Length: 113
Length: 115
Image (cartoon, rainbow over all chains, first blue to last red; front, top):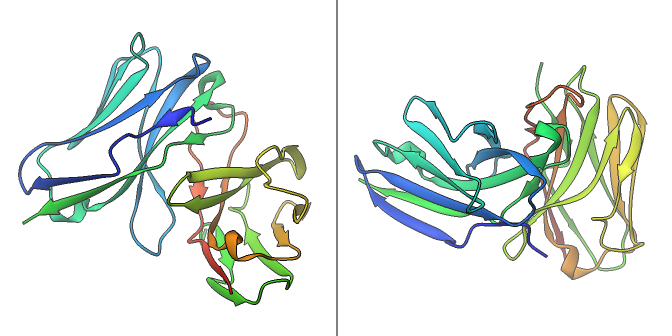
C-alpha cells in the first residue's frame, strides 16, 4: 500500500523553464512533508520541507505547495538548471516530523540544456 | 562531522551467503533508519531505531533480514541467506528524534548484488 505516490517516473524540462514535480498522499495523519534530491551513486539529500500549517514554503529557486484538501503537494523549481537533473523523492511524516518518513517512488528530472 | 558512513559501498555475493551492511550515524543523532531502494517501491523503510532500541521493524521483508544497533555509533543490517531478489541499494540514515521538523541525513548507500 503506497501511502505516498509520485505518479510521474520521469520528467524532462528545458533549461530556464519551470519544473513541477507532483506528489499525492493517502494518509490523513501526515502533517509534515519533505522533498529529497538524489544524484547517482549518492544518498538522498534534504531539499525543502513544509508543515501542514502552511500551504507554501519557498527557498530560493525551490517552492513547495501543499493542498491539504486534495492531499497533494508539488515542488516548483524555477528557473531550472542542468544541475537540477536528479531523482526527486517526496516524503511524509506524522506528528509534525516526529514520526518515521514514508517516501514515494521518486521522479527522475532531466533538464535539457 | 563526516556524515553518515556506510560500508561497504558495493557488495557482490553469491546466493545463500550471509551479507552484513554497516552504518555509522552522525554523532549526536539518536535515531537511525535502514532503507532499501528499488525501482518498483522507491525508498522503503526496513527498520528504525531510537536510542539504540528498535522501534518499528514492520518493513523488514522476512526473517532472513535482521538489524542490530549495539551502541549509538554503529548499526548492522544482516541478510542470511541472501537471495538474488535482495539486490538493491541499501541506505542508512540518521536524525535527531524528538526535534520537530528534523530531516534525516543519508549515507551514500551500499549497492548489493546477489548472483
